Length: 316
Image (cartoon, rainbow, N blue to C red; front, top):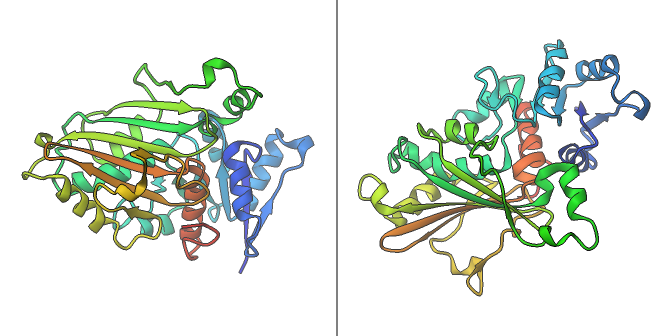
């Protein structure tokens, strides 16, 4: 059986990556809009309603508008923007979130694709909240270092000047107004009652992402230590194909003591780490911000919704 797919915003970074992931799929027919009518609302609406699955790779307001044009009850909309990520009418597209999430993705026609930073943070924190090890009222902090592709075409163009300007050669913290667009979904879907303090950092490499969350063990309930944190995460993701909990304080993942942010690139995999001492722990989640952090996650949700093997066309 074959399915039709339309990507609205097919020229953007996420849209292009979705096209690449679907290019070798014999079960998928990708509908394309002609260049001369790319902004024609009637033609876009026609294609949106002609497809079995639509990916919205658009800015937030444009995504809301495009979603409103979909009137075909058989069309599933997967929105890669921030617009619907905490909207209760939409299902959050993170299959590993909770036990019932896959069933919800199969049944519903409106799916919001998670943000890259948020995916890593939620996968680290949600199991620990659910297990009662972290009080949902606690104030957490998180840092994310990421490649510049997450900033879209304009940022990519800035970095790909040869040579890049001096100011772009070192890592650059941003989001310092503490209003990063991923924080609402990080708070809501991790199960927190207090917004985390979140600082992302963009660096001079194309893709790859690692979110780290530091913890004083005195913050944890039930006298938990690093081993207990690790065991909880390992148990939660034990049967997952795309989320892997690595060994506790895994020396094999370090190169001379340094952590490789890009080691999950070109996969749909998220790797979870716990590094700990007697008094402290650092949780780290590593993924490809264009894979499990964007396009790969969207295709995984599509596969689930269509009743297919959720890993079809994806690299674990």
